[in-house]
Amino acid sequence: MKSHITYEKLLELISLGIIRKTMIKNHIDNCDGLYPIKGAIYDGLYLGSPGEDIFLMLSFLDDKKMKEVAICFVKEFPTTLPLNHVNVAACIRCIYGQTDKQGVLTSEKSFEEMKEDKPDWNLSRKFLKIVYDLFKKNKNIYGLMILDEIEGHRLGDEALMYNNKDKLNKMEQSYLNCIKLAYECNSYKQMFSPYFWASNYFIKYGDKKKAIDYCKLAIKNANEYCDKYIKKDKKWPERFLSCLEYLKNNFSLGEWTEFYKKYKENLKSETLKISFEII
Image (cartoon, rainbow, N blue to C red):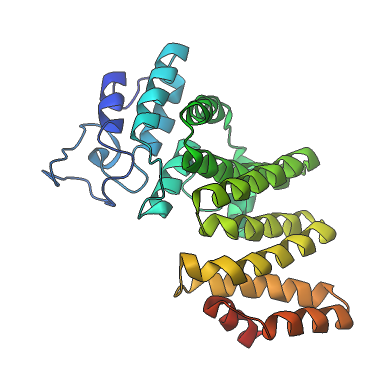
């Protein structure tokens, strides 16, 4: 089996920058001084670049080359909050070989497909462990936070695919560490979104107590930080509504009335206000 690009071309691609352009286009002659890498995915310029190319090359890298790729990757990785955080997260997701945004939570069909395919993330984790250690050494708090967030998603996927409680516990710790780091680097999105994803994994796993706990935490922190991240977004009112619906269906009438009244009278977030108006 032959790799899609050479090791040297992979380093060249990474050196163009982790996220320089958001493009899904097969042929690009020139773009702000960048040039395409022949043979790379979408000529080296695409959403998530260079994550997918790294993933496809992992099995062709020995330990020495893998570390060199990791060093090159870390050198180009943002050290502070970028304007396009979503694309940076997509880059890490692609290193796991994942194109679906949230894995098994995307849909029931995606869940069944992943259970059948049984994705192997061992090489991805080997590479990202090197990256994680380099981020620690370089004190790149933002980088550590993103790695914890995406690893939390993958651990949650595995917990559900294999009905594995240990993976679920590791997922929880990964998300909690992500949130801790979010406060250190002022990443408002990660101050509430990991609580939401944790609630979803616990709901699907069937852990009612944890699901309730994390739905409540998602609402609490969203009220404080969501609008500092984004004020107008169609996805988050729907997501918070799902948390509220779960709480309403699993609280006693008295618990729900108390919870609803507490937040309804003290809503700071315009985004969350939409969810409360619907429920």
